[in-house]
Every structure is written in structure tokens, then in C-alpha cells.
Length: 277
Image 1 (cartoon, one colour):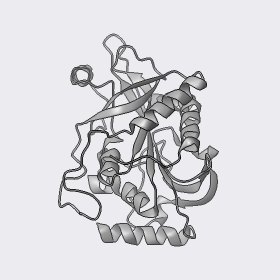
Image 2 (cartoon, one colour):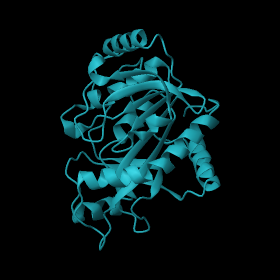
Image 3 (cartoon, one colour):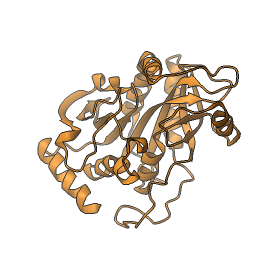
Image 4 (cartoon, rainbow, N blue to C red):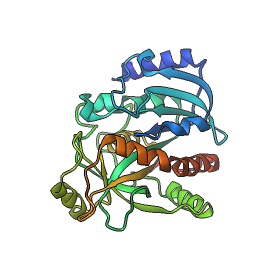
């Protein structure tokens, strides 16, 4: 895998004239609009990048964007990969490995998810402070010590300093945000009422089909992470209704400007004095 990472990175560097990003961004379903805020220097379709999978889900454009956001050099994935698309976890998380090799110091992740906390409303923003992994672990298999330790610590999957800064930004801009636990399932089916109840009993506030693998791999490489979720549907008894992927995209698109403001402002405030845990 290390050879593939280096080969892919070398090709990207050639295509972007050695653009060195400080921050990596992964944009989830219906959340690719943040790219409009980036002063784009280079844009690569996934099919131009060696060893990259291709996005097969509606709402995921399938481009790697290089440019400046909030005064920082960034690389943004406009569309991610999912286990349910038929990719293995090494393929799903391969772009995170490459972004680290390119030079990123922090990873920002967004997603759309189903809220199981009865206090949540559709369209609410939730900052992740922890997660529960119900997917195959992305680190199963032979460990590459050059990338990270065999048994990485996960006591702080989401950086506490970034969470505090993000909540302060939201407060200054009168944006309501919650904080909570995300549970990752494989999908692609949306959850049954019984599964929603299980997720809540297990201690999660929201459930989705992404983010956890990418964060595990980022922490394996000691990259601080920040993640934010838009609650696009509710898995709360009495509030469960039939939901489509189009419904999820619609809600995400409406709330995206708030998420974009928080992430852009947070990136602008970064000084890279964070000490990886």
C-alpha cells in the first residue's frame, strides 16, 4: 500500500505543480458546495488519479480540489467513497493516506446523517465528539509501521480544541449546533425503526454510513480531526417517515451554508499549534 500511496502522490504533485496542502477536507452527500468558497488552483477528476476509486453515489461529484480557503492551502474531496459501493476499507480510506503524504496537518469531514436523539430536529448541525464503529475496521490486516502504530489510541478521535473553536464560531454567528456521538453502519439501506432504537440505546445521537473509517485512518497517522454532520432525517419514535436519498440531499443543501461558514471560519483560525494525541 505504501508504494501505491507514494506513486499516487507523485502523480498528483506533478499535475498540481507540487501544491502542498495544509488541510484536507472530505465533503459528504449534498455538501460539495463548500468548494464554491475555495479559490481553486487545480482540479482533478478521480478518474485522472492513479489508484483512486470512483464515486458512484448521486451528490458526490468525484473531484479532488486544490486551492485556498480561509487563508490556508487545502485539498478537498468533492465526493467520498463508501464501503457499500463495493470498495474495501483500504480503498475507502486511500485518499486520506494520500492527503497525509501530500502534506495535510488537519482533516475536516462532513456528512449527512439520521438523528436518533429525540431533541434533534431535521436540518440541525451536530459536531462529532465521538463515534461508535459498526463497520469493518479500516486497519484490519497487516500494519504498515511507516504509516502508524499497530494499535492506535482512539481516546480523542475528534480534536477537543477544534470542537471548542467551532462552537464559539457558531455562537458568534447565531447558528445552533449540537454536539454528540455518530454511529457508523455499512448501509446502503436506511435504518429500520428497530435499528434506530438500537443505535440510540448504544449511546449514539446520529447514524450514518461514512466518516468513521476516514477518521480511524487519520488518527492512525496522528492527524487531528474535526467532523460535522447535518441531520437530514429522524429515527425517533413517532417521527420516522419514509425517506429517500433525494430528500437527504435536499435537506443537506439547504443547511450547507451554515456548515460552510463554520468550517471556513475554523480553517481561518487554525495556527497548527495543535499537538496530535
